[in-house]
Amino acid sequence: MAAVKKAKDLTFRGKPVYRKGNKIYYGNLEDDLILELEIVETKKVQNTDVATKVKFHIKDNSSEKIGEGQIYRSGEREDLYKAFDIGSWWLQDALSTLQ
Image (cartoon, rainbow, N blue to C red; front, top):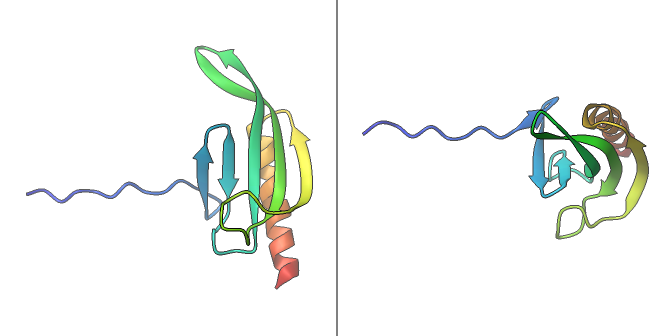
C-alpha cells in the first residue's frame, strides 16, 4: 500500500495557526501568551469573503480552553495581514519580556 501523507499544520513565522469560526489563534499552545484575532467585518471580493475589520488581543494562555485568558494588549486593523503582522510582533515582544 502507498504511504499516507500527513497534512502539515498551518504556520506563520514559525508558529502554528488555528482557526475556529471567525477567530484565529496564533502561537505555541505551551507558551504563556497567545495571539487571538477576531474577524469582525468582511466584504465580498470575487465571491470570496475578505476581512475588512480585525480585532486582535494578546491573551494569557494558562486557562484550560484556548482564548479564555486575560487580555494583556488589544488592537484593531482594517485587514488580516496588518493585524497578523502587528499582533505577531507584540506576541514575540511580550514572550521575550516574560523570559
